[in-house]
Image 1 (cartoon, one colour):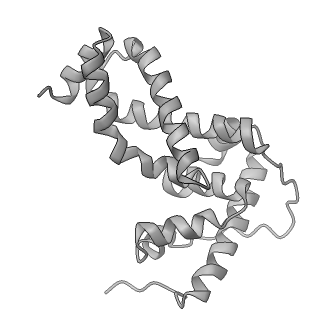
Image 2 (cartoon, rainbow, N blue to C red):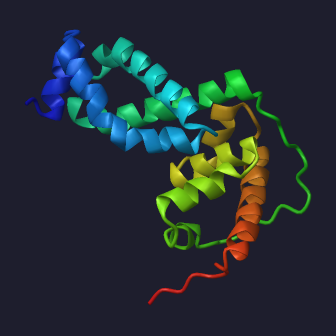
Amino acid sequence: MLNEQELVKACQKNDRKAQTAFYNLYKSKLMGVCRRYTRTPEEAEDIYQEAFVKIFNNIHTLENPKAVGAWVRKAVIHTAINYYHANLKFQQNTEYENIVLSNDDYPNLLSTLTSEELLALINKLPDGYRMVFNLYVIDGYNHAEIGELLGVSENTSKSQLSRAKELLRKQLKQLGIVSYERT
């Protein structure tokens, strides 16, 4: 069995067996990413497959096979965003009043949930809020990058994140999770 870097090199030579192994290697790791950006498992599967078509079409441009994990993840996220734009018609939200930016401890608070519970909560968010929340809180993009990716202003990104957090607070409160304390 080939290691990851050997798989990349074989994929760069259009080796079909290596492509299948590479596709399967990342499927369990990245289907969760796809699911966070979609409403259904079928949409996630579509995004994953579309991403890998792009990945295999562009793998020859990857100069450092050791960086393949981040490169593949970024390709999947960008494909999910493109899918969102093409199919869900992003609704810009330009109401900026009452924007509350806080130092919430979301990563710790959300870590108290199982991945299935977290996915269910995120999927309840309106589409724009869900996209911004995923990009900012989970995938680590900043508001300028999010604005560029989604075609919105930086302030719209901030507003949608604030509103997403408020909706999540309400959902968490309904689940009895009001605060997180480290032990």
